[in-house]
Image (cartoon, rainbow, N blue to C red; front, side, top):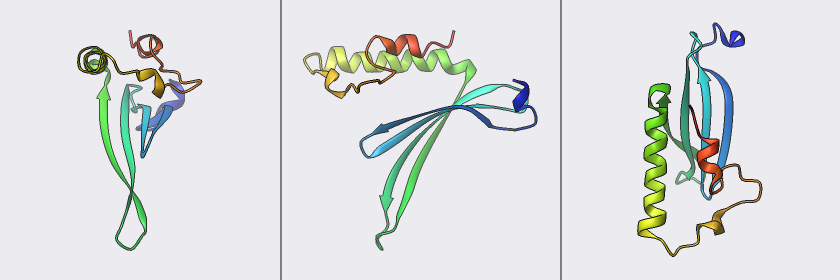
Length: 113
């Protein structure tokens, strides 16, 4: 993308997922050479003893050569929990109206092929 030339780590797409006390950020970024990678950030609001707050963040960098392996491992892990460890649990109670990544849409929305 020509508009990103000369801007290292330019952010070109961002998705925020609120999950209880945590927020996850999925950010697609571009390098100066128009290569792309994904950062996944978990942000948790924490409090100091004096009552002031700060955000504790953990960041994961995911590069294009690992997209498919990561997606396969993530999907396999979630499927294992749902099908093997908690087959009788109703996960649909966590679905939100308008959520882009609900049930069968998960695989379709996250394909990087």
